[in-house]
Length: 509
Image (tube, rainbow, N blue to C red; front, side, top):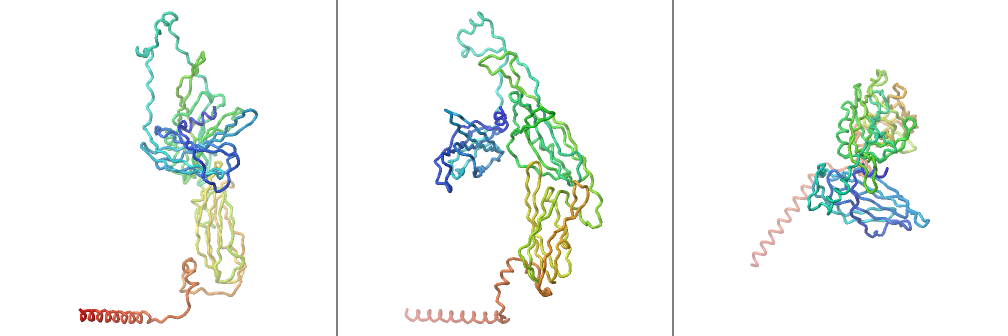
C-alpha cells in the first residue's frame, strides 16, 4: 500500500507505451546480464496529471545514470523509484523502476524530442513523442438514486427476478476512525535576527490506515499552501523538490509514516515574528462496507480535510555591536580555511591568497571581510565564488574569496592583522571575529610602487600577458608621420601606372 500511496501522490499515469531500442555502442561496457529499457507514459493526459519517463533495469544494480531530458513546456517534478524482487524456481531477480515526473505548465501540444539515457555504460535511445495536454477532466456525474437504467440496457428478466427474490438492498458503508494529521513544524520557537529557522510541512499516517487515505490533487493544493507560508520579513531558501516518500517515525511510542510535503529555511531580517497560519489539506478517505461482499470493491470514496496548527517563531534582536565591529556581521556557525598559491614570497611579486568561509547560515548576506592594509602592503580583490548545499533540513555552503597581495616591505606578513570576518554565533549568543592563521615570510629588498602603473594593470590577466611579451625597444615618436609619407608615395606611383596604362591602350585603339 505504501507504493500505491506514493503513486497516487505523484499523479503518475499508467504507462501506455514502451520505447525500447537497441543500445548504441557504450563508452564503458555494461554489466553482464543487464537489461534496461525506457518507458514513456501516456501521450494524452489532463493537465492535472503528470507525464512520466520510466527507466526499467533488471539483472544489475543501478550504479550511474545520466540526467533525464528537459521537455519544453514542462517542469521536472521529482523522481520515484520502485524495487521489485521476484523468485521463480528458487532463483531471485531484482527489477528497479526509476520514474521521472513532468508537470505541464499549460494545455496544448508539445514535442518530446528524441533523447538518450546512459545507464551503467549502456546507452538507451527513445524516438520521442508528441504530448497532448488536455483540460482537466470533469468528474463523472453519478446516477440519481432510484433511477432505473434505460430499457435498452436493462438486463433481460430483471423485473421477474425482482418480483421473485425482491430488490437487492444497497450496501451500507461506515466511516472508520483514522489516525492521521497534518503538521507544520519549525525547528525552534525563538530565533535571533538572521538565524536560520527550518520549517517543514508533514503529513503523518498510521501504517494501518494506508488503505483508508489517498492524496487528492496534491499538485493543485500545494501552491496555495506555499503562498500562505511566505514571510515578508524573512529571507527564504526553499529546498529543491524531492520525491515525496514516507519515512518511519515514532510519536508517543506509536509508529507513523511521515510524508514530507515541503521544507524551507527562513532567515529573519527584522524582529517581526514569523507567523504561519493554520493550513488545510484535503485528502481522499474511503468508507468501508459494513458487510463486505465478495467480488465488490466494498469501499466508497469520500473526502476529509486535515488542518495544521498555527505556529509562530519569536525573533530576538541582536545585541549592541561592540566597538571593534563596524558593520553588521553575518549570523551563523562559520569557520575559516585558507591557502596561498606559492611557497616563496618576495617583495614586489603578487601573492594569490584564498580565504574560504564555510558553515551553516545565510552565506548570501555575508559581507566581504574587513581589510586592514598595513604599510608596505597592497591588497586587491576579492573575487567571490559561492556554493550552497541544501540537505538534511539545513542550508550550508562555502564562500570563496580570492585576493591578490603585493608586499613592498620584507619581513613576516601576519594575515590575521589584514583580514577579519566578524560573525554572530547564535549558539553562544555573542559576537566573534574569525581571523586567518597564516603568516608569510616575505623576502627581498624594499620596493617603491611605481605611481604610473595602476592596480588593474598589474592584476588584470590581459595586461599581465601583454606586459610580459612587450618589447622594451624605444619607438620614434614621428613614426606616424613617416608612415603617412610612405603611403602617399605608393598611392602616387599607382596613379602614375594607371595613367600610363590608359594612355597606351588609347594609342593602340
